Length: 450
Ligand SMILES: [Zn+2]
Image 1: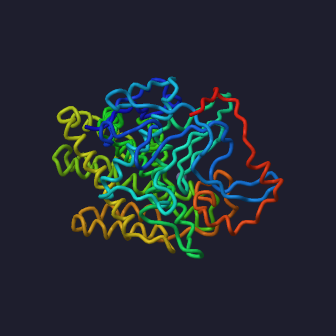
Image 2: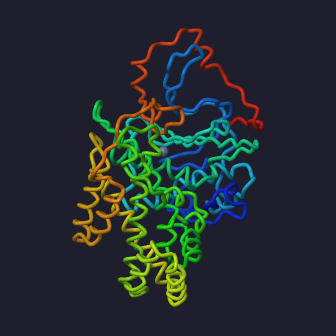
Image 3: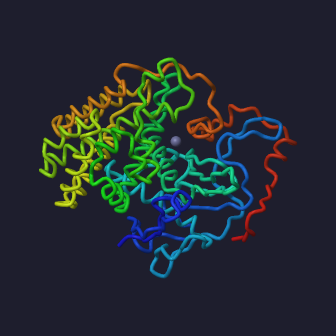
């Protein structure tokens, strides 16, 4: 018996129609405590915390490392109901955000621990037993680092504040970083290639996408909107019309490594050729599986190739998909689940096999081809090779970084700062320490003490 939560697949501010779905997590019923919390992680909503964890600067500019645990006051935690579930928390109730962020993290871990074949061992285990998931509403970012997963809010120009605690994609993406730190690790000094940073973002986006594909409603939406004709949606860049799912939209891009040969500025952009390749691989595997299951004929597959250049064939192609989907929509679901699980398994196995030093996308591609050899005797090698080749991943590597990392950069000092690194930083004067550490005030809702 697992534990129930209410999760937004799409945050309410992306899609006003969305309402949270009741999802059961692997956590045994009764095992979760107030927070929510369990043996591996806990949610806190600190009172008066104004700075994110990581490398901060004191009032006089001296850098210092700020790490969990939060020892100050906290807002009232979410508590389980009599059975041990958290689905009694509904949007706008105090405690819903805490329950939601925990549920999203647990859901993503459930998905990926299955592919990885074992529970994730936190990379910060030497110092902390548990991950602190902290909600910092007045901060405009989200991050995963040494002992913490911290979520702020998006501040819109129209004044709206959109809490990342309600955004499954953002939370799942940060859990993706947690997986990389645990399984792959960080490069030794002097061995970090730009593509390591791009890989961090690409893998985290894929981790989020594959996790989202475990919500029945996401698959349902994609398939009923397209009738399984992802060819057209994908190749003609119309996916966004069909999918309200943001992560799918960003995965569906056409960037290649040729764009980054002379340099790059942002690892999120640099990640796109790899994320796009993996998304196209998923779509190609899905269609190949439809043909193999006899759900569409090879003639339809050919028609898809023609439709890419001849718009007159588009309508015939969509008709063929409409009929095929109507005949056996369950078969389409099974084919998409199968493709999702192959990609999930291949990504996990690739992560186990890679090393972080001197890592580039060519390594990722070659490793995934080797994984395919080992898992299936090379069943998907043609699809894998073709998509990595289209993104020019074997041909080009990223040039130098053209500007220093900005504050929004996800993989920066803050994320890899360790407690021992404080000894390398200059000491703050007494006065600066006093100002840096004096209690901060918050004007959000009224605090309670526990
Ligand atoms: Zn990231």
